[in-house]
Length: 505
Image (cartoon, rainbow, N blue to C red):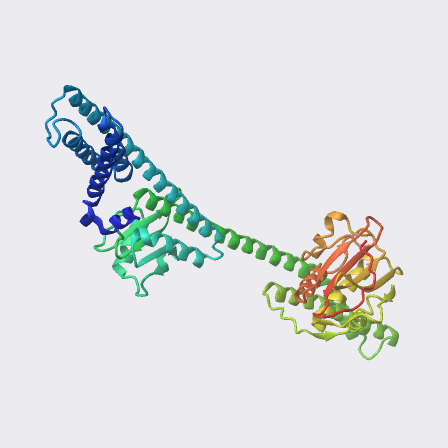
């Protein structure tokens, strides 16, 4: 604590180590006086080494030399004859003092060296701990703005305040973050920082400019208005290196994310174009052909044939509208515009609405319902869940053979309502049970060829179910074993309904 106090006071208390060293010599001299009264000591000067070593360990070399000089003076004056005189009559005592001076000098040097090494080790340990804490804070930064604030917070003690971080932006340098001053950075400093960014030297009176260099290039520039007191150069350099690497990593992560989004966007656009060009051509061709045939009939023609053509136009228009609706739903999902309007609904109402919606697609299948009458009400968006279940039913109808059975089974399990849609189709290979929820993925239909449609139904289903707090998974025991699409929907809070068994196969 005394050392800290001295460091705070600076040069005004430089004499304190010497005063305390003198006090240590006085204490040892008093102890030696008491001992010599009790025990005859031939070499009293050896006791004063305690004061010399203590002074060297605490204060360093020169205070220990001062203690050694005082120790020689005290020994010759109080303990060697003639007493109370600095003259030493006995040659043996002179040799004793000479040995003491040599030993004191060596031990002082060694003790001072050990002290300096201990201080250096402690300083390095503190530096490493500070750099480790800095690295952990940088790694824990969730956003780039948080990262920039962390960098300035740690660099300010070494560089001064106010401090600004300038980063490249659209071909120029822009202030990414500031600490300690809300005033705009002067244009002269921006220009000088630009020269530093380009690798040139730049100096501005009253400002400190420091480039943040990586192995590739300059990542940015630090501008500090009032330089801080002299800091450890190695520590400051390490801080700058850590900051530069963190900024470079953040930039690379951002560029990789932007590139990934761009690639995904290109893939989505190409898949959408392919889907539109292929899947929309069929209903459009049917509509155009039927309309052309009706036009050619004029007021004549078989009424039955006219009704069939009108029915074809209606069916293909509905099919076309379904494709367009799926594309629009995918656009809503990609743009994050799904906002469920939650209300208490009956699961049976959702199932009935989805069955009515897909009545024509399910016409060639026998549908079996197993909905317990005591199912609890759920807090869901009725439209989104109806749409999601309709897509599941449409998917089952496509992949199950004509005339096969479809089952809709519901129950309560582990605090959730579980709704299974089970078909008896070809099944889903294990490697595709997660891919079926990817946009534009289409598995093999009942005849082994890719099923019709855009491949968006289950992707939209998953997004709508998850927007309602639920989950959906595809299960299949293997080839020819059929498939189960399982929807798990959360029960409302404080709902204490009894559980109805549902198979986990």
